[in-house]
Length: 383
Ligand SMILES: [Cu+2]
Image (cartoon, rainbow, N blue to C red; front, side):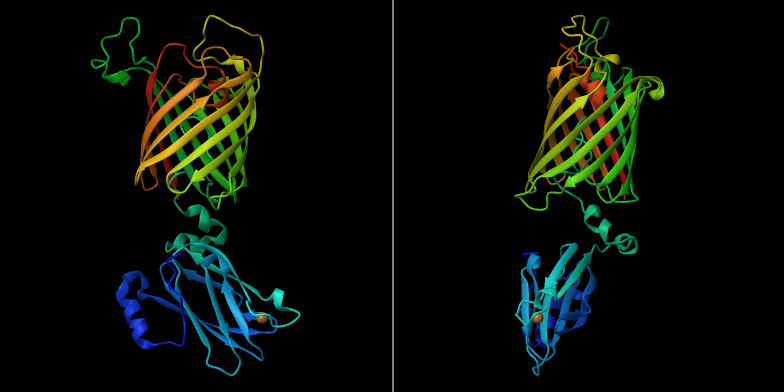
């Protein structure tokens, strides 16, 4: 929006020509006449498509009025009796932007408000409403709903689906009894795998629900609600997360979980996560049972820590560490490292982890004490 072209002057035909030549995106101009009077703008709701040049032609009635769009750094003043003022800019950032009167014009001055909506060029958002607009944009440092096992604060557009496949090869990277060498076993890709299939759906703005079915016959249902959405560098993101899972398709060993996902994005470079979570009935489905049980606690409290660092335009490094700070803690704490590539709505991630699980109870149940496993996650967004 910093690049917004601002021209506050009477129209000069030559300028329009120069603007047309500057790029094809600017070739389309959307001209809108706005009448400013005490104390309203007509119209007060404007919708334009991203990539078009917007030309607001502002006419003031009786007294001088201003039209300011603070979030876009735009402002212009119109005077009665004079030619209309032209405020021209390139609408390049999708979103909803409030505009106000910027010249005090009387007792109702504060009520002179309007909204400019810049919708993405894709027709889908235009058809389906403005609340989906921002959720459809690709977030470069938060491109997925998960790190490796931990959730992120990525919002899922309302009425949209996302699918994820998790795959962990069970052959340890340093071999196991009776295994050939790592290369002959193709890094474990020959071996049996723990596979999870996940489908999630956006039920409302900021709210999503999903199911995750693991081939250990564990079935998890979960929900996530976005409480805080990081819109600037000074803010943070915060999601509430709830989950219920159980073996034998949720019939046995049920394990609830509740927690929050706090995120902080650093520009387009990195994001970090802190995720305190309580997981109940943790010790019922151990993928890596270690002989030494140090506690007969049933529940775990864990704090997931993670980061995603963008190292190339569409390539990220991901790391997560999930210490259990109290309660049941058989085995080691989960550690995962990954490299991933985003291609449109696809994300392909190769990961190495000391655990084979993916759900909260599987992660809280502990990782292997001495083995590491290779795996991958694939996400597909259907929007
Ligand atoms: Cu005014």
